Length: 170
Figure (cartoon, rainbow, N blue to C red):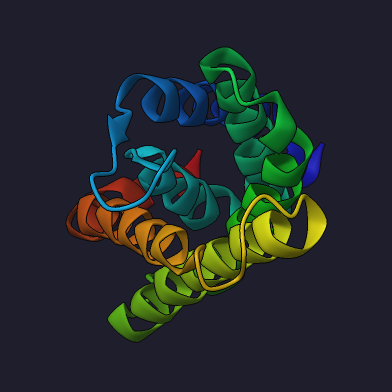
């Protein structure tokens, strides 16, 4: 069955459930931006990219985050979150996944930085230009809150990335 082994599918299911649970149950409201919150779910998105690659990480990230929005009562964001977080997982996987061998720190830093930046830009565009909930200037605090959220995920993920890299050998 190649790259879609039963073990990898089980790991993907576990990671999607972890993205949901860690996003939903580590929610901390942002004191700087209205309706924004911080969570540790992005660390699991980065982990998914590290151990399963861009395609699986995109599905895991999009699905887990979509379900977290459903659970937390953000139905307006669900489809956008599926797309934005899915692409975020794909970007992370593109840089973080190396099938044989270890990922360099340069690739790790670049992967989490670009994935986090994409997430912040994606939500900014969605909020300002798609649903038009706020003026573009008024949404700048939300943009920086999303950057902060991505940083929280990176701070959790990076120190754990080296020992967790062994999961990709399943």
